Amino acid sequence: MAQSSEQLLAYIREGRTMTQGEKLRLIVALSVPSILAQISATVMFFIDAAMVGHLGERATAAIGLVESTTWLMGGLGSAANLGFSVQVAHLIGASDFEGARRVLRQALVCCLLWSLMLMTGAIAVHAYLPFWLGGSADIAHDASMYFMLIAICGVFFQMSGLAGAMLKSSGNMKIPSMLNILMCVMDVVFNYLFIYILDYGVAGAAMGTGMAELVTALLMLYFLLWRSPMLALVSRGRESPPAHPHTRTPAFRIDPAVVKTAVKIGAPMGLQHLLMGGAQVVSTIIVAPLGTVAIAANSLAITVESLCYMPGYGIAEAATTLVGQAMGAGQRLLTRSFAYLSVSLGIAVMTVMGVLMAVFAPELMAIMSPVEAIISQGTQALRIEAWAEPMFAAAIVCNGVFIGAADTLKPAIMSLTSMWGVRLTLAALLAPRYGLGGVWTAMAIELTFRGIIFLVRLLRGNWQPAPKSAAAN
Image (cartoon, rainbow, N blue to C red; front, side, top):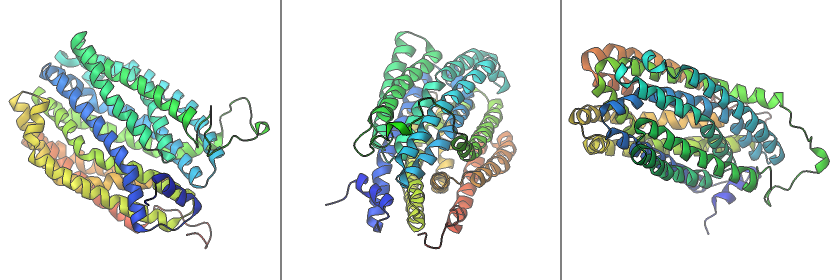
């Protein structure tokens, strides 16, 4: 009888030998729910963009103008979450469930405070942001209103992401994935209500997303804090009995050691998201002078392309969990094996997705917008990008491996060097002459370069810390 993913995860903590088939089966078992959630999230954005796209090109351009900045905010929130969830994965791998719960308590408080800081900063600049990004006056109001509403809902996004990351670190991919799929369904329903029924237009798209995130955050926290066998704080499951009551401190206190480790892991990723997001903003500024059609085509093509790379992110999440737990268990050879298998699977899946994207690019763009000029420019961009998907997969999954190993500084430097030194430089040179196609050519070249240098780092093996003793596996 085939072992369940829970049994195979227990093998990691117990130090048992796993066959190649068992490793691959575990990677797939953890990847599939996450891939489905990633794809459903992409479909959600796909439907959102199509809903807004049918309001006209100005509405699409308004959201597209601030889209990269909203991603930047989300990336900064995710970096904080990972700073704590990677610690939890290592502690669970070492079977230290009480230690994992201590880290979770720290994470809940610190990440909530962080999200409130991000929200405050975003609200302060929302009225100026569209003009800073080079947007015209005819889309500035809708763009700033959309950004402000998304920023207000950022707290829900942060807590939902934190709870999901913690559940995934424990090996529970199914619950976060199911709830993310549910969020996609709710987003479509709420968007239809706010955009069309209540006639709030672009602002309605942000309201619908915010309501879906609120409900998802509440459900994620319920399954984490009440139902998780390993991490529940309110009512623990059978696998992890409560500690003796006299061992607990009734008043919560910030643990400097946990926070310091979270900063060490998360700060390079936060800086990476900040500068990568800044690079996306600069890319938007490069595209903006090309006109409203180019802005809309660029935004919609990015949404379509995400159908291609979301499976890679699903596999990367599985790699983060497995590498983190294997490292916590002190199994070096198993850690490396999970890394190589995950990256190989990611490259294979995204290569197929890239071929499909190139073939069906016109049909996919036609779903997004009825405007022929937008369809034409978007199709050209997608077919250029399709060539980069195999190495983009390598970059995505390798980064997931490095995160699981708490190796975030050097990969962040590599990503930033690639983004700023290759993509933006080429985009600035090619855009005036080749338009949107030049911008996407620069993107494809940069992603290929980034994938290659990430693979070199993976194969060299210096992302793994030195063994603490000669007996380490």
